Length: 479
Image 1 (tube, rainbow, N blue to C red):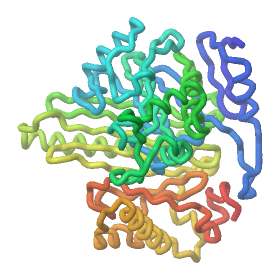
Image 2 (image 1 turned 90 degrees about the horizontal axis):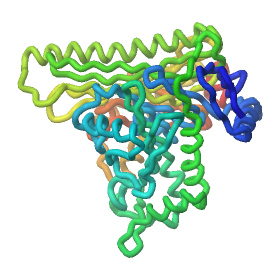
Image 3 (image 1 turned 45 degrees about the horizontal axis):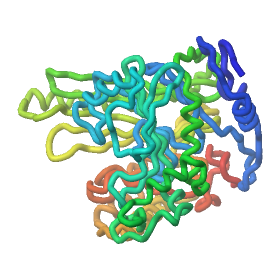
Image 4 (image 1 turned 180 degrees about the vertical axis):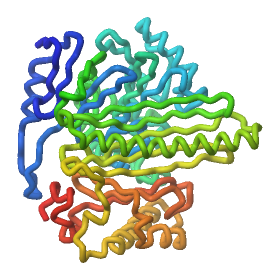
């Protein structure tokens, strides 16, 4: 089926005008439309919209794609809302702003060579640690992209499930990383794993005559013969890639539904020796809705506040000390814990290096009631007579102790009891999904800094009797 001028994923969800002919498989289009229009009641008794996909748009790299709503949309595969999500990370970086040295070979020199190789239809430079048989070149609407799969980054103990697509457009590098839920997949693929005394997960890849079995699993995945959880993750990537459209022309004034794009801000200051790579979300849709403009402005202000502070700090440092080897860095990105017609829950994460032995990881969260166009306050989730801070404190302390105990780590009782005490400022960073309240503790807040950001997940079902029936989360559980 060929459409001119306009492609519609669902009349109540997304309208995109396009300046080129787009070909869509008829069976796929019909299936998607049916999914998007379905309504069903879940086991909580709540009437739930069964919209199953969302969409992402980049003005800078000039493309659009669709992805499952169950996924966390992120700008970095390491930035997740819950640490257990399926993560679709889309990293967009201007070629000239790519650092000279990065992890897994994604440095500037490699990217420049890669871009030229792909123009010729060649796979180009090796990046990351791919399964060799997975490396291939795809042609996407006239633009060549490289694809590969990563199942381990540390021999038998490095377990991950990631499919990666890399392409270059409009002077930008785009890395799309579809990361599966490792816990879910490994449970369904028990034949490929064995007990481990080294990994905190308690398992590692099996070996057969010295050969690690992830290559065998990849073969099964490629043939459509892997266990269900793994195969679903693998196949979803193909659906995401097939949805990519270049050069879409989007009119924000007519777009229906809820839509996400990324705002990119990059800056290199040679005089003061610093580099900024910052990305934050922009939301639009619901045809001329001022609600989403208010949300986007709030997120922009949050991201801007941290970058401005970083610039002020490094300019001061540079004036006092010009002996720093290498540049000072700011890397900002985001993840979306929930996005639907009721609420948007966003997680902004940033890394700064201003000299010293190591950098600093900072966070900020913002939760937005779409229908009422206002920020969601933590206190508003609970009934007035419920001591929610004591509840969150008790739950978090117990959760962190159990987590560290499983990992064989020592609990610093003083840091934990203070950082998770029942004070409002200790619980300022929270996220909301369709199933749970998520508390994010800053680096150093409840554990020594080496543990980074600590995530505590509290299912709504655990405190359903104390949920405010007028709160936005009452849309997801029967209270």
